[in-house]
Amino acid sequence: MIEEGLVTVNGKRVYELGIKVDPQSDRILVDGKPLRKPLTQKIYAILNKPTGVLTTMDDPHDRPTVAEYLTELPVRVFPVGRLDWDSEGMLLLTNDGDFANKVMHPKAEVTKTYLVKLNGKPEPFQLEKLKKGVSIVGGKVSARHIEKIKKTGDNKSEKYEWYKIVITEGKNRQIRQMFAKIGFDVMRLQRVAIGRLRMGAVKTGELVYLNDAAVQRVFLADDPEEIKTKRTYKGRATSEKKTAKPASKVKTTKKPSKYKNGKKV
Image (tube, rainbow, N blue to C red; front, top):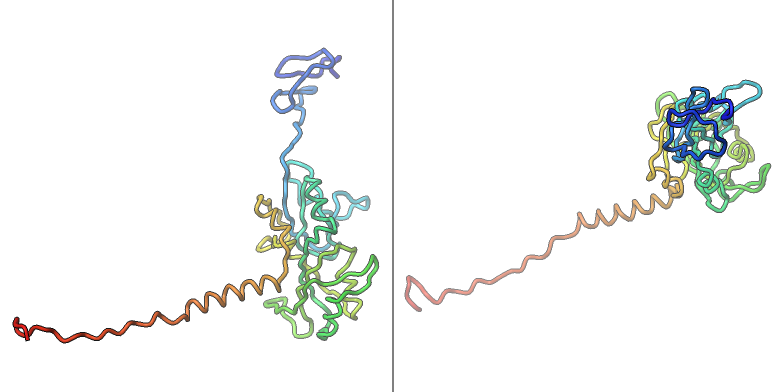
């Protein structure tokens, strides 16, 4: 292309092979079109993935993928981990390979928090079994935390129950397999947090950029028991402070005056 005179640098046509240019500062055109500069900025974002969407950038069968929600990004990113076709919620995206590897490495034990709708009502001993660990395809896994939660509005049901479950592994269809081991099917599965980075009010299909502080929250464990303990301790200290008795007043005895009507008595 250079020998054919199709390349210009800062408005000057270049014919010499091996000419040095700075892609960050020089304006380079190839056949009249700007050469895209490499983007070195690291990007971190979350997508509230809808159900019926593949966690991949391309599908040979032309099914919907998360790539359709990323068209406005200035650089190509990739998902960190995955969510099943029929699962929804927080999907972490980045172009930072080191960050992605750190998040997914088993030693990091990054917590993932899900809300799960079941087709029944488990007994306490069955939930305890999930905390102790069950064997599924891929190995033995366990719930770091699990608790029943109340849903309101359209999600409220007398027949079905919702649970919050926190895990650190990332096996394929792990939560569905775990509940299947105690005899229940998962009717709905939402990931609502990675570490202490929470979905909050992000709408389905919405993409949100993360700042540095939000990125670091990924590595803080979402341990409801630990958080509850800290809040209880803090609340107790505050309560004790509020109910503390005021300092006792010192009673003084007034001595009789040595003077009466201006005269010494």
